[in-house]
Length: 162
Length: 162
DNA sequence: GTGCTTGCAAAGACTTTGCAAACTT
DNA sequence: AAGTTTGCAAAGTCTTTGCAAGCAC
Image 1 (cartoon, chains in turn yellow, brown, cyan, orange):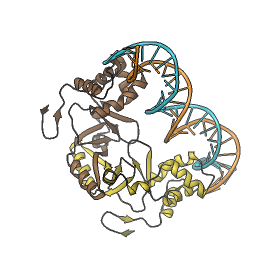
Image 2 (image 1 turned 120 degrees about the vertical axis):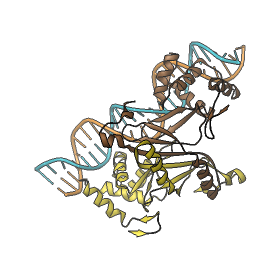
Image 3 (image 1 turned 135 degrees about the vertical axis):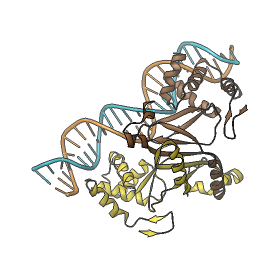
Image 4 (image 1 turned 45 degrees about the horizontal axis):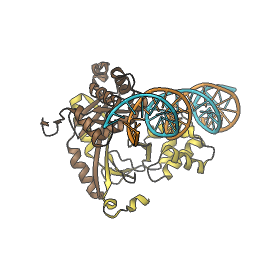
């Protein structure tokens, strides 16, 4: 593991990590599972189950929608991808190239783009709140819905083009 | 309006507020809409669309599922109820007896119960982050998933009984 | 060979929509 | 009277599941 800064730790060889994860869980290393894994790591931005299916099929055209849906929970459990639920619309996923834990999402209500932002204080906040309720925090999500000022000012947002 | 504290402002006569909202939008004040509104305010906890349908029908048995689904966005837009998306499972809703804006949700992963907690700093956080992206915050959501320590320690959680 | 995995198609869960009748204004 | 709004049932969307064939170990 290479420490990049306090928040960010690079996962080395995630492909092998995933294989080891499968074996450790008594699951089999199939071509389809690896194609789905590879597809997830080739997709740089947030992606939906459907995006992942399309990409996986470019790598192995035998991959079915069912297998993608069956694999997503496994990938999520392995920690190599994260599930990001922005409320409206579908669920999104994102690969964890860096094992960043405390990230907030800023969602542009104009173009739908999702920005990932560090929010380390979430850890402290979760603990503080949970203490009062006699609970133990497992994970936290912070989401900011916002409007694009470029667009409000100029009528255009270059980011939307992406 | 009665100021209870900095975060909490009581909405007086939400029923009239809703009627006025409908009129101001050129929408009609129908029995079904009012039954759905009343049902939402009788339900004290978080509720789903289906919960709301059941309750509405007790007040006016002509209310259909379609009308509930058609009314939810109106109620949400009026600000009298809030939509709460906890990710997995359905969407939940909650009436805004107090017009509380900055609330986080703590969700018990053991019993599914949702606790509402004040989190005023979210306003500051949203602004700070949005400034960097040249955006304007519209709303923010903070969610903490946690486990119940009562249950972990004693095997039982009284809160789950609710 | 054993039994986990797969693709397919059907089923499920939740939400939206087209349409004629009913209702608000 | 004019134009919304409604209930119903059908359609839609996304996800899950049963099953026999196929594959990893």
